[in-house]
Length: 206
Image 1 (cartoon, rainbow, N blue to C red):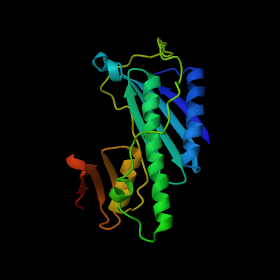
Image 2: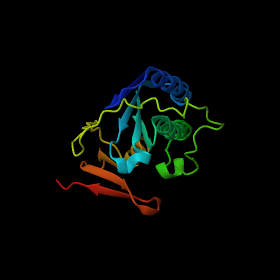
Image 3: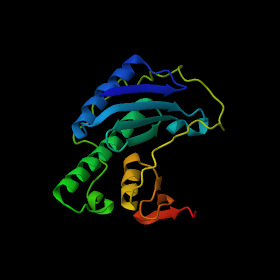
């Protein structure tokens, strides 16, 4: 499994890269042997008003199955990685449990039923510190840049899927919405979160 750690306007120290790789290697292989590449991206928010949440870490797992993604923000990259890693573990467990559900029954249960009893509490046991949290290894390595720019553009496959599959994919990537090609209606559609643990569905009229 290949693990790539990179920074956006941030220079990543070698010791941080090594520690992140070691933790992810153990965590990902524990839940999913199909993952062949993990991308970790560090991003710094220069806005001083967001000082407590200025460091963001995004983790993306690429596999033969669905893409699993998690991200978190904190005042330093160590805390942000720990939080994102915990979210990633919870989503990898959901995927593993869903596979067991499909193997055990001919008709798979809904996303809500399959994940109702799962908690995003991370792995059991006490966390091991990632490094010396009293020292910021990124001090002086962040480049300032101007805001108000398009900094990301993504393209994903348009394979037709059911609404239930779209909800499951949304849970895996941790977003509040998910764009997909509805197999039933044949239309571009979006599922999204609503208050009270409900979902919404938007369809584009052709």
